[in-house]
Amino acid sequence: MDALENQLLNVTKQIEKQIDQTIELIDNLDVNDLEAIRKARVDELRKLEGKKREWMLNGHGKYEELAEEKMFFDIIKKSENIVIHFYTQNSPRCEIVNKHLKILAPKHVETLFTKLNAEKSPFLAERLRIKTIPSIVLIQNSVMVDKIVGFSQLGNRDDFSTEVLEWRIAHNQVINYDGDLTTPPDQQVKKPEKSNKKIRDGTYNRDDDDLDIEEYGLARDNLKSDLGFKINSEHLATELTAEEEAELGL
Image 1 (cartoon, rainbow, N blue to C red):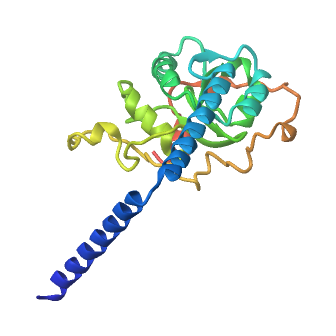
Image 2: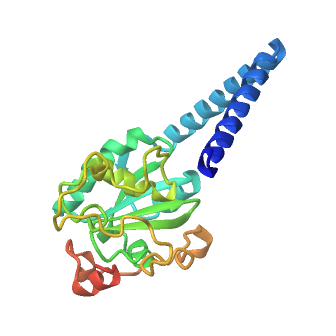
């Protein structure tokens, strides 16, 4: 028997030992143990139900617009995880994002999905460096942890699926996600054909200068109350400029 066979045999014996220990533990459980397990499970479900009710009261489970900019500071105090879409009127790509977020909102009630008109939110647009429309900002515990700029990380195409957007949002645990984060959903079923429509920079890079997470932390006490900023028209373009493409590494 060679070294490899010995190693496989040892691994098999260890697995069998762990299984035997688990079976023995189950066999030795008495009524009190089973009751304790049942009670802990019931308590866990009750807490989850209570959390779900709280989420729904705070506007989770649906995708609606914030009526005004100052409402942003209210929602970041009430919701731990937020997906906020900065949009402008008459942008076809913003309508595409709206369609997908309407599907994801009721699926992920643990997260608040909302949108805000960038033209009517000059302070936040300036503070969060919203230069391209659409932009999706991901917030956790009142801090911006990620930003999806345009469609460059969604296949660089308008017909990306809801599953692809869900996969991209999930990279910073802003939503609960059980799928494979290493590969986009549209590439998991079959190998992608060679084309120019590949996912670019699919995984979130914490060194990305475009995010500046620590610099742009959103604790309310650190934000100014003055909303006297303006958004230049070039910052609301629906296509990336050459400078922005260079910034994003495209």
